[in-house]
Image (cartoon, rainbow over all chains, first blue to last red; front, side, top):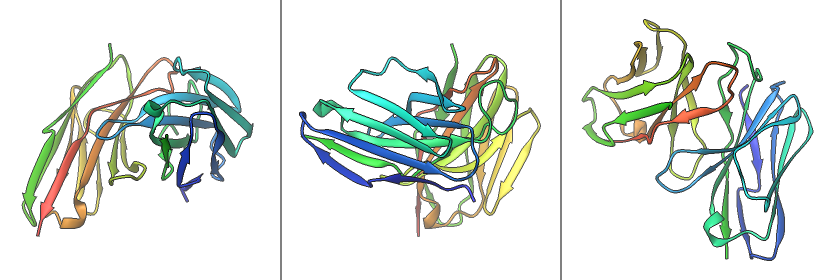
Length: 117
Length: 111
């Protein structure tokens, strides 16, 4: 089973709201990722967690705050977003973490479609 | 700088008309080339991982091949349900977890 689940599927929020996106995997994967994807563009990496520790932050604005409570769960907390943050937010996981030569295939969830008004 | 270029940007085929998608890459110490399929508004669906030149993998009507400079995704006798955007990504060596994606090829298969 290579399933990554994400909730909610859709989210509409105002610029003053606080909301959270949730991602879960039960494959025993040790690395988890957040991506942002705009229409007709490839996914852009935002954050990487390796063994529950933040290993990569791609200079993402502080209005996006990631959290990894345990090895199966990844959250993305959203606060004071801008309309240009509207996008499809994708979570992914891979079996191995940094430095591994194998087990590096990333499996993506279905995404959360976010609209900021 | 790592770079992935996919061609063509868009491809229209008739059902049953075989063709190939190309992914050219420049990366320092390739540690994996990945093919994904993505339907509109959904997350990328994993298809193949290739690690070394000469490697080939098949799944139903799809076959992926890898050389030192490019990868091909061959589609044999496609069906309308194969219509999607196909993404290619590479992972560099040196312990990086980051994938570099191409811009994708949008495939449309007409009945």
